[in-house]
Amino acid sequence: MNHDVINYDVRSGEYLFKHATEEVAEIDSSHHIPHSHHSFELYYFISGEGEYYVGDVGYRLYPGSILLIRPGVEHHLLIKDTETYERIVIRFPEDELSDVIRDGLSQKDNFYFVRNSEVGKEIQHLDVHFSNIADSMILATFKATLFLILMYIISFRPEQSGANADNAKITEVVDYIDRNLTEIESLDSICKALHISKSALSKIFTDEMGVPIMKYIRYKRCVTAHSLIQKGMPPTEAFSEVGFGDYSSFYRMYKQVYRHSPSQRQT
Image 1 (cartoon, rainbow, N blue to C red):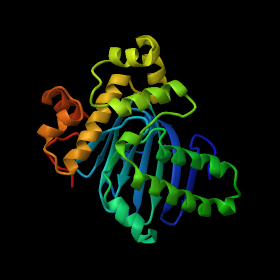
Image 2: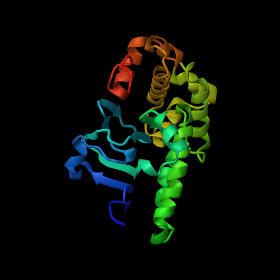
Image 3: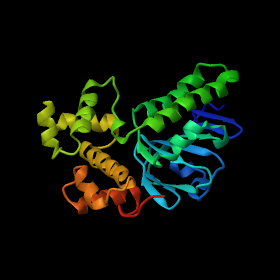
């Protein structure tokens, strides 16, 4: 276990937990080459700017986004060279999963925004666990917490990506967005409903969530539309169902996030 720039690097067989912060120029070039593993991988993105490809599908990385990468599926990173890059990587073997978890994961998409949801909290809390237990107990703790993380992922819905409960205003804002996602028309309408100035709302939201509020709303609409499309709804219906005013703006946002057109179903 290392305690320098890499916060933690815990390995045992096919199990891996790695929390690393690096300057982009120092990243091992192997990250940029398509590769695959025999195990499942969870990739939790904390900071930086870039894209991650899983198979032929590219995903725009946002702080708090997570990728579920299945065994044998090629994946690689495209990170911009102007940013510090921080992420958590978790790998675990498929053959040790219960049928319930294996079946549950088979129903999930590859990509979610989970910042400050229970998924994100438990992943980041692994650092705390490893700081407070004996080395002999690390693997057992990792497996127990991983089970909880996977159950949260299986139960996760896109609308659950809430804010830190300690920040009452952000929690109120995110709750409002979740309840009114399809009806929100502008930043002004949110400010009026929540009795807060545009400047104050913009600052606290960007500081806490890592993305401007209207971009966050477009992103959540896009993720929700993607879920509907994966369930069989035509893109030409899904865009208006989630609150986009016109198909062209939905198409641009969808391409930005998923790097393919809405009509190209993910397999």
